[in-house]
Image 1 (cartoon, rainbow, N blue to C red):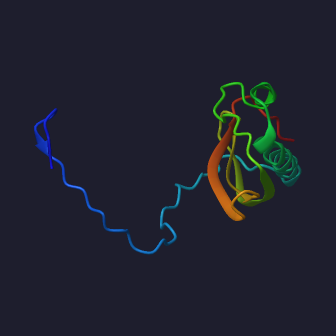
Image 2: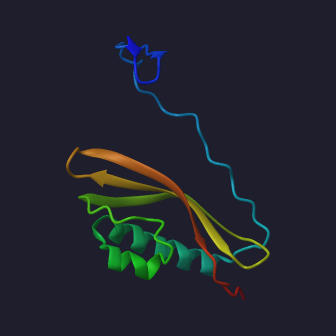
Length: 129
């Protein structure tokens, strides 16, 4: 078919793609410049578990308390937090802490598992020691 507004030939394929399969994408790994001790790592993991358990039902106002830059929008979904998958917590030489995580939720509407990967970053200095 020819699109008269842009004068180009538009070709569409009605063929269904192949069977769904796992992506081979893996995000770049974080490199540790300063070791984060086990107590701090445990406290950060506890916070992340609490945060992501509350996140699906959190309002914009509640999220502002944890995310001043509003990087995570309110989603208001019926998701049940399942687990953090392989969290990696590192600190750079400026004292900023980053957690590379995957979060697993169980969707009550579709009865499926949803996994989201992200890097959570604290810009404030965290004192280790």
